[in-house]
Image (cartoon, rainbow, N blue to C red; front, side, top):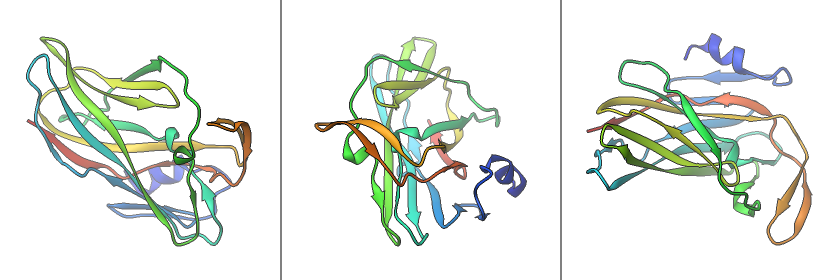
Length: 191
């Protein structure tokens, strides 16, 4: 992604940003794509293989911010450099937990890792899927061996949110970081 692409993805209220190959910094918040295990084995038919990926968020701003971690979604480029189409849906609804909306104080950082599963939809179609927004799911189809690129998208437009918090019930939460970011790509290999 070029710096020009990063500028296009910014929300109008943001005042500063910078990007290098590994780190995206927007208004004092740094985002780094994480892929702890970069080589993943294709599962045997009828089995599944797990993978984790995510983002490190570092608050270098002067005020604390909440982040709605369930708002991070993966974007994957296939071995030919094409964006894979993501499907998804909602198969349940769950309450928000405190760990879903951490408050990062100035100087603090947080690693948020998503769990993904590679499994066979049928004998000719390998997919990768994971959990999404409070009971939803995402899925990518027709995965083949090769080198992939993954990054995460995040968007939040509300400073305050009324959320169904377990066990409190409906609660208003303030100080959410407002913005739209796309983290830098990181590689993983499927073999």
